[in-house]
Length: 101
Image (cartoon, rainbow, N blue to C red; front, side, top):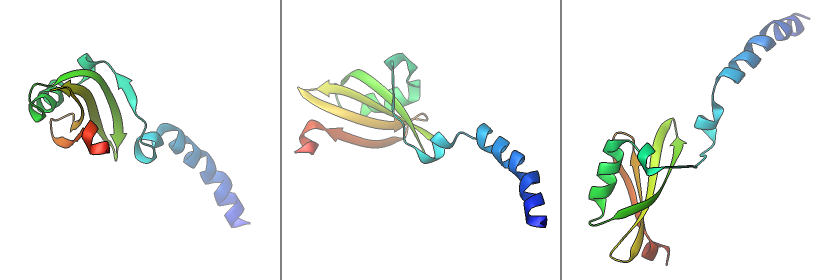
């Protein structure tokens, strides 16, 4: 009986908390296409420095463990590259078309 009363009293609080939390950032890695102008300047600068002569055509952002990760796709010397950086400009990963082979 006490358990039922506690459940009925606490249930609205738990449901309200679940509505206000953004579980997508914690659980799901959802990638969203963005314009290059939406990429933070520090992230863009790091990505450009990562591959000599790169010209970016596309950008996307996703949240991993609460941190925004920007993926920029571009070409340099006839090869396609994906560069992942944080908003603060920390280089995460560089991938190229030849890495897929």
